[in-house]
Length: 405
Image 1 (cartoon, rainbow, N blue to C red):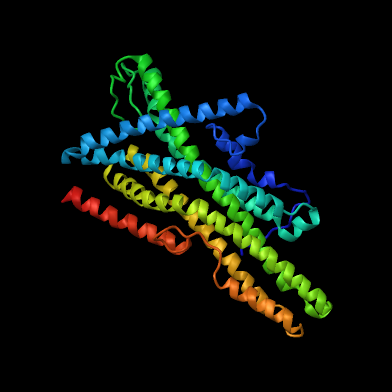
Image 2: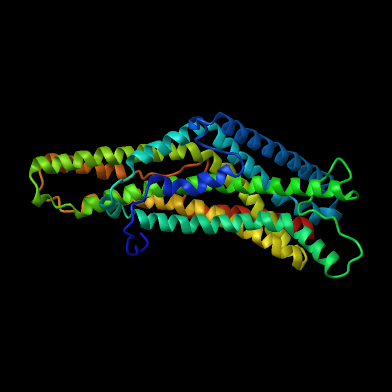
């Protein structure tokens, strides 16, 4: 485990640890607890805003795909065609994540309710669980990850307008260049008329925001749930390590371990729920991320300086996203495995046979650690990160060979 700083003396709530992704998700109209909102009008408005946002988003995605198909047939425009490929991959990931979230909404809400029931409520308990440490660390990761991903969407969305505005109003350019941040095939003339241009431009900007938020928030919810489970697994391990059977009667020892087994079993059941909710989403995420990293890397090595900066942000955001998911998957594995080591290492020699039998069950159960297991992938860990990077490099090498002959 990473080092823990001095704990703050402030009572936290479960909502404090889940507020960031839930509030951020609402900015595109997605309210996980909409069924519990007694304000029917607000509930319907959120739903209409969400549906409109994704209809607008996918309309532009169709335009990106059309642009890619039109230009990929000509080798002279291969670089230009592949420039839109990372954006298409990113869009597909956002769509897959939102679909997965919609399908598993009720299961996810139940999972959050179960985690809320297990959350320590007293200040003394929260110190034992190191709640503020986990909250501080989780918020730091989520903030950095969100800023990086939203910087990508913002830079692609607003850079052309900012550039054109500066050149036209401050550098004496005779025309206002009407460019877009993403390569789109429009079924109409989207550049001649200024009103149509700005209408299309802000529609595209909102499309990018919807994609960014839906892309980020699913991962933020994954981070939130795994952080909670990691906190519980480490608490069980800490409690076992600190327990001294010599200080208690045999009945008290057995009762202590029985309660811990029930607690451990519940945490493991919730970890399986996390796996069921996120495993397929992560599978498609990793597959798409491999292509996105490949195409973004290709653009970095073959484009001009201006595009290199934009695609480097894109490349970095994709790498960080995969790394963060693998990091938290690794944390779940290591924290749940730690329980077996703690059970073996604490003072159990003088305890009763019943106590040792229960302890043996805990050790055996910890041999199969909690994990997230996407189909065809090993349990998510740092090794998975290296596998995704390897896949990306293979695609990248093939694309470079095709382009340069």
